[in-house]
Length: 200
Length: 403
Image (cartoon, rainbow over all chains, first blue to last red; front, top):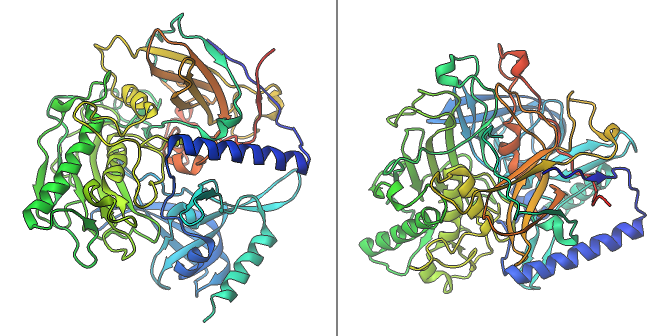
């Protein structure tokens, strides 16, 4: 049985059409949530919490990864060139360690760990000490990918966990508060403001 | 995809629908591994087609042990019984129930006889690459950062004969050699409660829900994006639990149909005659020029999500990540193919496709799709004809039915 689905990748909706569509999808989503009665939140870190929990924040470019065996486990160390250090004192190249990796004939898998491609640019929220290795705060939550749209030339930032809805127990509402397709300059401004706000 | 004859049943009408709510409903995925075809045929199978990570289904094969070392500063596991023995018994009961949820699904090769007796170990750091499947509540790990409640390390070999620690050597391609579950022991803001005390501790996470989810990883599952699925990547809010509580009559109550269908696909029961339905097809663009120029050879939409809905009940039965197929000797072809197996026969299903940009995106299933290919860049000496490059997920297509 073969279904061929026609798709139209070049549909350009107006802002108003997009807004209305998103509103409808959101409302349907709220109804669905109520039906399944399944609250869906991780240990959700808000943007201010991410900033607060990070000892370093940087705009980086992925140089490459390698797996290592240490403390009886396989880890993946990713080397990243620091393009701009936004928080903390970082060297020119920082190493971010994540659990899992491929070593010889063994592959250790840990679901939920972000994967990086060589040459990819990101903003990473890190925990660690200068001179040592760093770790991603909240894994996907502390990973913001920088993308340039070749058609529009626009550079945007999207958090790996952008689509995760957060449940606010006080308001009893679900909201998506992640960063998705935010203009790079807007993201930098948001980061700058939050860091200023947290200055003691 | 498997090369066996697909059973397409007349009763199973694949009707393509585009539902407004589709963006929030997606389904199971598995961890995959490409065998090392540079090795002799007898230990590599000779094919670069990805295989699913899994355990052999030999009775008594799967053994779990858990560390009775429990953190005290902070106390991360909350129980009703505060006596030392009673506390351990209460936790062990939850582990047993969580395992039972997965071994009591009809139509799978997994049944309670597949499990070896649950063992206890007093060692704090029982989790490690030792060939033993372990559950640890008090083992610090560098992987824990703020926002991470628990995770599972699953070790798979890319050829037969590999051994981890004292565990048995792999006798099957894709065999899981070690699976360890870690609960965050050191975050003072995070506690896990047994069902008995969850209501009294509304800021705690439900131990049973998290453990059942992590055991899914230990069995070979990646993440699902179905809201009600146990393999949905995000824990229920503190004080709540996922699905239903297990009962004597229905030990698998915590699971959703998506979890059950995934399990039937992963651990197919050769004697089952009910869940043998399969729907397959391709998702292709109307305009081939919209396909990515690189890597070469992409002829269909990659990483679409195709979901089967029971036409009668409207329930989401299963989903699968589409976009590729493979026939020995490989490699994977990115031709837009999808396949949903493990469906009950005698029922009608509606099928819809959607981009993987719903409640969780490609980031939650990276292990499931980035491991579809190997090539001479990632593996020096890899035969070029059996190498491939995984394309970027296509998240922007829109769908409509054929007239």
